[in-house]
Amino acid sequence: MKYYMAPMEGITGYIFRNAYHKYLYHMDKYFTPFITSTQTRKFKTREVEDVLPEHNQDMYVVPQILTNKADDFIWAARELEKMGYREINLNLGCPSGTVVAKKKGSGFLTDQEQLDIFLGQVFSQLDMKISVKTRIGKDSPDEFQGLMEIYNKYPFEEVIIHPRIQKDFYNNHPDLQTFQWAYENSPHPLCYNGDIRTGDDYKSISEAFPNLKAVMIGRGILRSPGLMGEITRQKEIEKKTVKAWHDEICKGYCQIFSGDRNVLFKMKEIWFYLMPLFSGKEGLERKLKKAKTLTEYQSVVEMIFESI
Image (cartoon, rainbow, N blue to C red; front, side, top):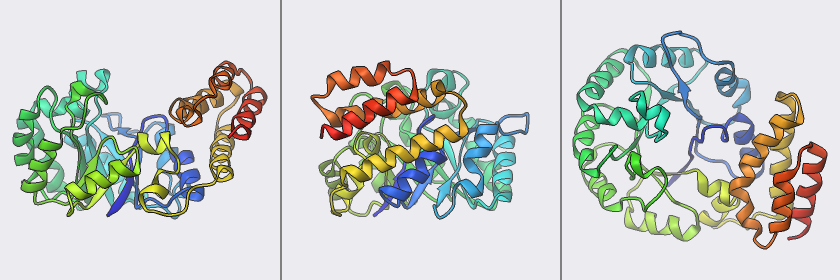
């Protein structure tokens, strides 16, 4: 089994990836938060920073592109190829309302005819590994059979399936029955993504789908930084290692952002997922949320780690 880190917009950028790779676990692949490919033929500064080779050394990183225009995807892929990337991922999974309204991400799943044309153009013009991260439909799992018929026509490197529809967002349970159908009918290597939060969750998926190539994990890693140790039955991650991981991320943000406010916003976003690990520390959680300076924030963080 291979293990992938899911792309999470605003969180799993290069600073997070490097700190995770350094202190916690070496994932087989890291997928970047999506790059929005547009007709301007220009990446945003933050997108460039995230994919610069010098920011992603000693890791297998796969840039993810969000678009419904074949020409834009092809341009972006070729630009990334110039940087040394040989694999690109197409985002057909983002459930955000603003994205879906533009018929991008999982919103693109509603126009299967256009999606087929899009993929035909992409694969006819690019000589790269191309993978796709998809949901099983926008409004109903019944859409997925038609989608799989399209995916099966093209030489994808792999198909990453999050077995929820767009309207689920991250609620309800993953539709394992639909994933089972894909598992039995796809000629491509499959990767499962969705609600792997514990070692038992991973065990259930790996036992249900014994020939599965890979699993992708996102929120589970944020909620439990030591999750991969549990899954791979390595030794438990020590508190000091988790603290070093946290400090490395904070240090990285301090280097690229000016002012405490931006750094605190990014760090508190991580704590939104991390705080449930520290049950019974509601008073410290409130202090953390109210922290307005880095000095104040770091003092609260020290108290949180000292209390466990």
